[in-house]
Amino acid sequence: MAIKQMINAFNLTPGTVVRSERHVLLELANLADGNKGDSENTLYYGIDTLAAITGYAPDTVSRAINSLVEKGLIVRQRRFNTSNFYTVCVPKTKREKIIKKKKITRANF
Image 1 (cartoon, helix red, strand yellow):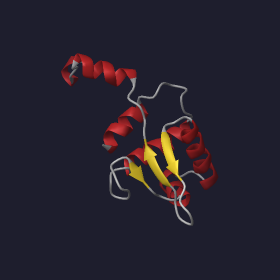
Image 2: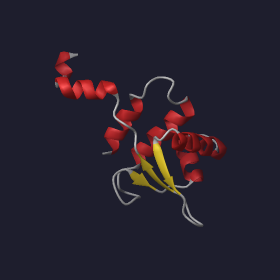
Image 3: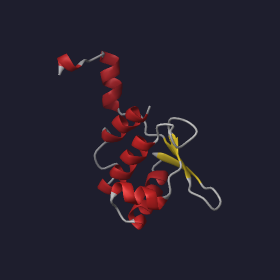
Image 4: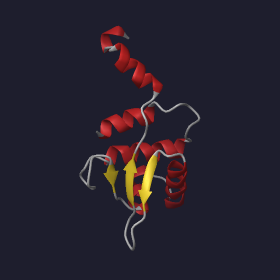
């Protein structure tokens, strides 16, 4: 399921997110594979860990996450004295819906 969320994040309409937001979103989608969370779209890494993974400063990661929450691309559940719980919920793009509808294969590209 993480790969589907990553594909949806890659196919977001240009201008929907800035570079740091896209990078953080892609990393969240990549990490949301059920290894550190309750389901396939959830995870609970801390800001410092996400900063180390993305290479951005913790403040940049925090701003990106706040922006992604405002845009509805992730859901954040605050937890007391621990890391937050994130759910990646990137919607399918029009491009992916068209490809599924027409059943386009790699050979058709």
